[in-house]
Length: 141
Image (cartoon, rainbow, N blue to C red; front, side):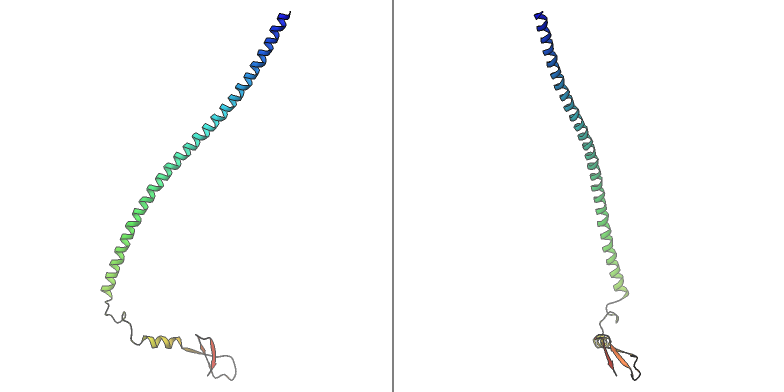
């Protein structure tokens, strides 16, 4: 009978040992499942990064094309400006009276600045008043 008890005890010990090993294996399986999930996320991120890289390459190529077009348009614009200045010189020669400064233009400008405009101030005995636009003064004449 003692022999049976010993064997039963040994079986119980082995069963407990197997249960501990099963727990360890279950923990390892959970760790492996977590690692697989992380690998899947990594693969997804790598796919997204590859897509972003492709998009970036396309945008760099498009930017280069637009820069080349801009350079071409700038050179055309400069050419058009040059043509316009040549045509302007042909249409309005420099010796033309309109382009040359007038000798008496300064006094005329000063007269315009100092011009006084008459207005009625609203008083019954007012014979007329002038308003100096530069100084904002009301002077009775």
